[in-house]
Image 1: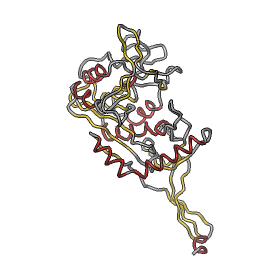
Image 2 (image 1 turned 90 degrees about the horizontal axis):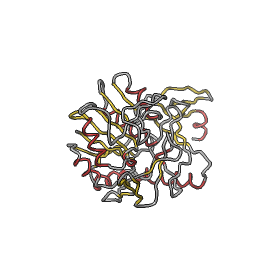
Image 3 (image 1 turned 180 degrees about the horizontal axis):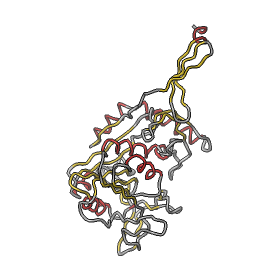
Image 4 (image 1 turned 90 degrees about the vertical axis):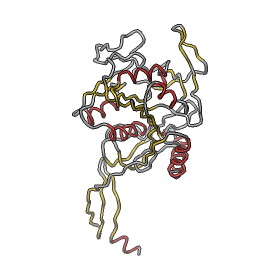
Length: 320
């Protein structure tokens, strides 16, 4: 048997951006490009029961993710690799980790495992997979980001057949709709510059935890969306919280901290952005209160697409 293995073997081999089936016979290698495309394990989640079923079914991925996180924490300066299919650029790659820590010095897998081809992180790839199922052609789309890897890839994928506007939040004193000297458009999620019923999609990646009035943000999104338009957004979501935890608020134009500051990364500000909320299950009620007729979580957890994490990554969909 060992002699046979030395004479003949079949294995997968991943180069920079392609996966090959390699057959070796008498030391001669023959490569065949693989046509295999893996779809990540997904679930539509509307309540805790849906979440628990999804976790139970895919617990082996959670355990695999825990082991990777532990290794990253033990070796903070080492980069780890895991092979898989990137659902953004459609390449077989080796996803690479970087030591992305949260405030408790735990490895944050959603923010790493970057694709070396398109640059998208674990979390961003889950958003793209969802959007590819929703966005077709001739849509008007507002993105609440502009200078990011996400925006660059979004334009590459959807820009040819859709009307896309990107924006960033540049500060309280700037009117929404202003374009600065660097060509960056300012939009405030609480006071968008657009007329009612303008967009087919409003897309936001980890924006809503940083607004001071989440109810107003949802109402404003509802206002600018057309009928049957989609608000698609990602947020840090705590499955253990029934009620959203309010960390800070604004009263009489003054910031009031209700808990210790929690700061998240901001590509425009090295000092980061303050988190006003830790969201819980009552976010469904907040979205529906704004007027949306349906809302659900799209969850992904899959080792073959590099979507390794100790809990599913959540993106919310709200339909007007």
